Length: 404
Image (cartoon, rainbow, N blue to C red; front, side):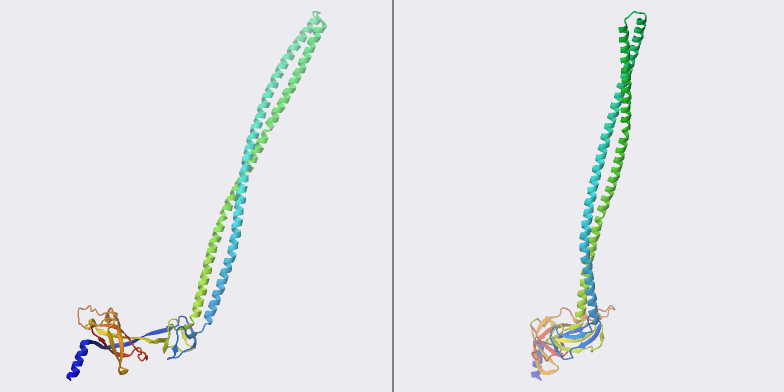
């Protein structure tokens, strides 16, 4: 008894032990990501599998149809985009050509208006000068008529006086003839002056009649103004058509977005189709099977559990009063209930940062004010050497950790 007592005291002094320990492993739950019926179940419980191996095949018919529909939508979107791009080029050429033509017409109409205005101004000046000239000629002709009439009247009086003198035989006959000739010449000059006056009057009337040409020139100005206004409206409309370019450019951006959306939909359809094949991300053993062939599964529904036998560890829940003696790297001895008398070597990997009570569903705090002090436990992870893969996740073990 004394020997065993000394052994127990030595063990308690140099080791921290607990039977609240369990073997843990990386258990991977494989579930369906899409809704479908299981077409083929390739593995059974206990089968060894490799990473990337297909374990379950779901019925892909619906997802094949969805991919075909996505491909058709993508092709339609690409065709719409392919049609819109050359149409934009044609619209741009047409609009720009229309703008150039409208601007050229506007400039031509503006030049025509300026020409019509200048021509009307010149015609007005020319007609006014002709009228002024004709009025001056008429005044001169009338003055000559007055002068000729006065000369004629004077010559007539001279002739009549010489006629009386000739009857009384005071002058010779040739003197009377000379006076008569002078009167006839004065009459001729008076008639000529009258003719000149009538001609000057005709010239004035003709110059006055040319005022109508000024009205015609003004009419040409009004017509040119109307042509300019129409050209201005056409130029404005041509510039407004540039908005068609902007609208079609936005339409192309929209069609590009539709193409990207269709590409994303096709990519998603392909992903959904690929997800009809459930693959394992790790190599290991099928630990549990939850579904059978022909069963209809929903997204997130568990199908299989895979674990890697070589990836295991022990979690020992050490009392907080003893955890100060446990340090990272400390050696540990693991006794398994399933294999009595056989110890497994281990090493402390890390010590938990919080007590297990902090992760409980019910909080440890008691708002009523009643308090009972209890000893809490902290998880300690221990790596275990198990070359024969005897340890299985879930086994209960007893752990002894070297105290430091």
